[in-house]
Length: 595
Image (cartoon, rainbow, N blue to C red; front, side, top):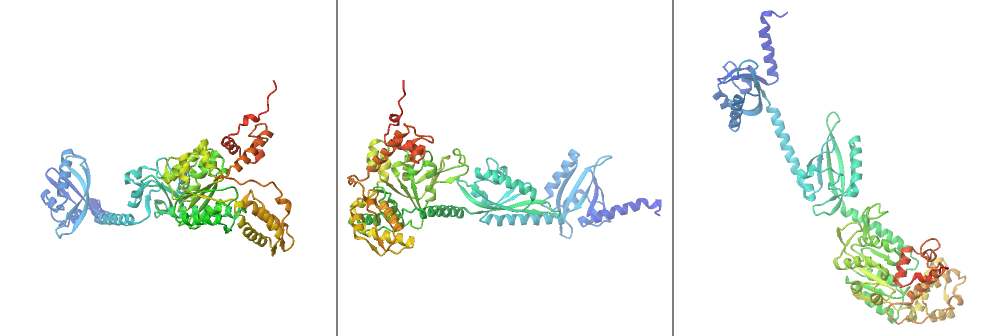
């Protein structure tokens, strides 16, 4: 039992013990000065607890010199405005030690003056200062990192980005904080925004680390690929406090992967091309002249225009130029301009952005981008529609392209080789081919002689092809019948080397002995007169005749299952282009109406 007479002193004892344990003392103050200091407050200031509460001058003398002006201002303001206060100051004890004291005061409930507490927060302040110093040092380290590094809040709100990230993005920290990753206006590529947002929302729910490949916009407006790794930091209760993000530049790797993927596709296409020779075979003066031209021009980056009839080996010569050039380690990308519908030529050559047209579900690089650092071979260049001719002219002049759906130019380092079996000069005169483009392409023309003008090469070609196809078929052919060789040499080969190749392959397949023989009826056809031009017009004449015959059968109808396009096995757009290019009047084939 506690004696009632001792209740007051016991309460004071409990209060004093509580203050001592909390490192907190109490005080009372009026206009005349301090009226009361508790024993713990004396201990905090390093003063004798038996002494009286210090005077204002004595108290101010204990305040750290660098904090005195601030404390004096706060006390004057407190007395003048008669309102509470809360601030932290440093004091210098009589023994020279420095302590941090938090001062909290409120107006007294009765009478004038103030009452409050002084709390020793030295350890907390030292810890805060140490943490602040560590944070500064950590940021300095992060600023030296080559990666783009960011710190996000638990809901992925932006808190901090290192100097590398801000320099790449061309932003200040405040500007960066105001943006939201994956939202409109952020640095993410528009095509990646939806994916970034969806993955981020799932991560907030699951709280699991994750990574994804994204494109980020640089200060100059271009985009590069980055691998972004997100890792959460949790508190003792397992709640996410921060997300740490590190973005590593993988743009070179992505471009290399795209190039390898496209080169693999191109190689697969090449392996499927049964009409392509492995070597240039022959020793005639005409062929040797061509090979000498190839050797000279291959060492340069000059644009080459290869002219010749169908089947003379224009792509083979183009490959020879590429293989002997400084770009031999780069991609060789062949493009058959005649096989692409006019409406898709620009997309095929220069690529397109997502949504550029119906069916463009994702960004797709064009053949020029795939050929970057290598060579592009534009076969049947005379079939390019006018719009594509303008774009190709710009590539040759400016060395840059624009994907369909964007006006952002993309620099390309590509050598252009072109080929045609048409008379481009005549096309220029007709207005179907741009004159300025013709002169850009015709920097170094190479004219391939037709096989009928290389009769000396036919025996060499026959022996080479017989040996090649016999090995493929697993057969042994030791001799070539003399009469067969005479027939092959005498034939004028309107289809040139390609026709010769097809005849030899068929004969090898049908051969049963060790002597190579062909059926005489295969070559029993009307001989064709040689062409006198530098390019072939007979093919155009034949093509025109085929189209007119198809229009005659379909009564001028082009589209539909019974139209001329279906009958010829080509796209409607391609046939329309050929009709215009060959000056065919399709209306002339319409069935007359009966009146």
